[in-house]
Image 1 (cartoon, one colour):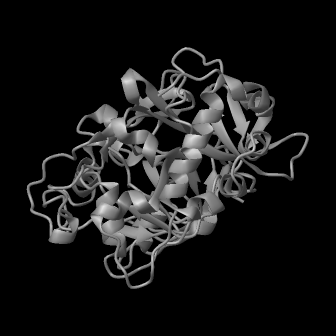
Image 2 (tube, one colour):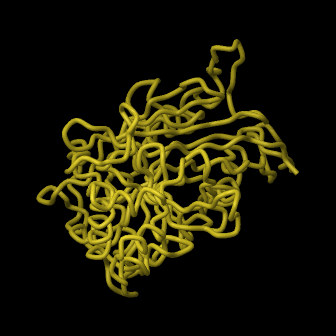
Amino acid sequence: MPSTWVPLPTDSGYGIDNLPYGVFTTDHEPDRPRVGVAIGDFVLDAGAAAHAVGATPEVSAVLDAPSLTGLMAAGRPTWRGVRAAITTWLTDPGLRASVEPHLIPRRDVVLRLPFEPADYVDFYASEHHATNLGRIFRPGTEPLSPNWKHLPIGYHGRAGTVVVSHTPIVRPSGQRKAPTDAVPSFGPTRRLDIEAEVGFVVGAGSELGTPVGLGDFADHVFGVCLLNDWSARDIQAWEYVPLGPFLGKSFATSVSPWIVPLEALDAARVAPPARDVEPLPYLDDRAAEPWGLDLSMEVRLNGHVISRPPFASMYWTAAQQLAHMTVNGASLRPGDLFASGTVSGPEVGERGALIEITWNGENPLKLPDGSSRTYLEDGDEVTITATAPGPNGTRLGFGEVSGRIVAAR
């Protein structure tokens, strides 16, 4: 990869090997969202740069737009062509005079929701997370359900409540019933939790009735973001039998504002953990190129690191999740979002949710400021970040997904 003429801070996560996409506005034009690309401490106004260098009509059309939908829907050959063009703009010294005026300091932009969510599916792919929850709720029995190692378990969420990082999270209200209560009560959740996850954004759609196989994953998934699946555990516990999560999950799901292209993550690909149950053929990836990803995540509560979940430990890969999600013929649309499920590792310091970290409140989390938490309080702010290995020893940044809890309305 050639070097860029854009000045880069030391250890910048937004180097020329990354080039994540987002959507931004400025204070001068708050009502004009534009496609942007992160490079160093700047955001490239991609549409303006395309016109400045005389890009092809195809490239200009998908970049001079108020959202990423057109680019995402265009498909993998266009994704590759656009990425190659932007790389040239930012590395060719002869284009610097044309492109540099369209670099905006990142501090001067407002980052928006980077895509228009179509459908949202959340999975449950960490064996460590699923085992911990099984031990919490079903002590003395087998922690994993009988189907867990045969298929990626998931649920359909609410696409309309996917919000961009730094959107305030209003504490939800709903029905709650503790085991000792005779009848349910209604009110704000008392067990508001996080789930540190990785999101996968679909670009190219698929035809209704046609499954998407493991080998077609990269033709449909545009890129990767960070995700926090906020969860009201007490509401969830009362409502989820027999049909699964509903109001305990649907009030908000936060995503990071930058979408790292799948193509940027070649150096991060790893084999998933060894599996002790042979998957059915449509999920069998043993002879395929692996789609495990070596992402290093970090979760902070009010600025204090409380967990470092390892994404490479996830039992089910995103390619398997997409194959399972469409095996019944369900179609894909540009903007579909599916999430990994809570990322948790084998150690206490690698758990991606407070329900695991505090063992459902039995072991309160002690913070450096002297306070403690079992679940989130109003005013708490949670921030999830991640990096991945890039070419030649570089690290790729995913930015952050952050949200502050505000009181119930």
